[in-house]
Image 1 (spheres, helix red, strand yellow):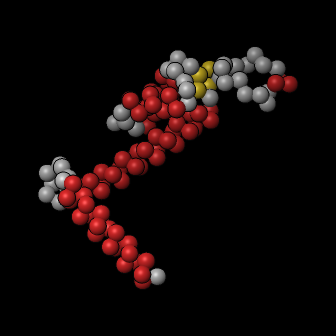
Image 2 (cartoon, rainbow, N blue to C red):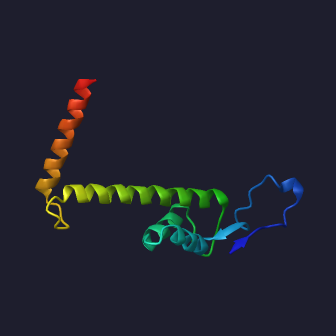
Image 3 (cartoon, rainbow, N blue to C red):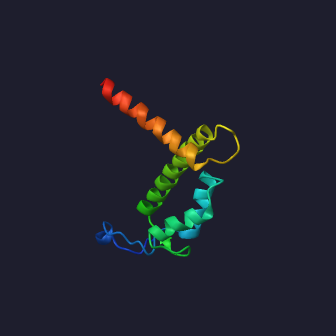
Length: 119
């Protein structure tokens, strides 16, 4: 799973050798799926595309770290959107009409304006 390149000399130790160290892209996907079990694989593959990597190519530590951060941010975003959707779905129908969305946005705008005028 993890490959480390030990072939470069100590004089080159400060250089990043992204071709021979790190984990494979498909291993990154497996690890991130362990972190977020219900995470869609399309998004995980999209993260690899962001790094211009294929599943068989190595992902260095910075790319790995950024992938995990991205997944955690998306995970928090999805959780917040689920809470918002449930709040807006007052009828508990699993759907939000355009009218309900516009009305909710209008109420939110009024609350924000009220808070700003009180400051």
